[in-house]
Image (cartoon, rainbow, N blue to C red; front, side):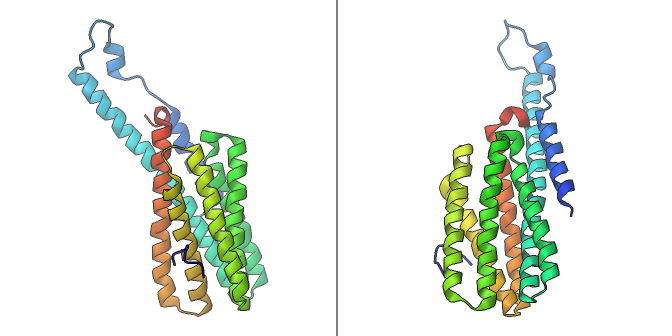
Length: 238
């Protein structure tokens, strides 16, 4: 194994995110803006209060966006886990059903950036997320077959994909450094690998701990994304 890796309804989740983004685009006229004139540049008590109100609104909208993204990323690990369990049990119908949801979830995660970066970015992000899932699936198939060489190849693909996603996101948003994003994604990929091994070995107590770690970690990914979006698109979040 490479040392670079450390071991609801999709439509509703997407709708919640779109609602949060739409709310972020509404900028109410503040009391200070109505009271301001060209001769008085000193900040009044009303101005200071309005600044605090704007900060509170921004924090709330950032929180709402983070919640929506957390739900999407939680869906990602939930459905990939279902694919893993079904593959280990050799349940083809269950694999097909879970995989359909995993793909729909990846489409929803990709769509979450469209309001900010456009349709082309959404399509690019979906291809990168599909690459992430493809590498995880390749590792899963190799693990079930006991093919060590194929596991190593899949691990390398997962590592390369993390670099590609980190490059894409860091170029789109200056508040997402490539190193930070890549570190988050490498750890995320490592969690997938660790979980697959534990499920294959029927080590369910250990896998339960890994699940908690995975959940906490994808929340970090969601929160970092929401924070970066709120900084880059401050007007939409204020």
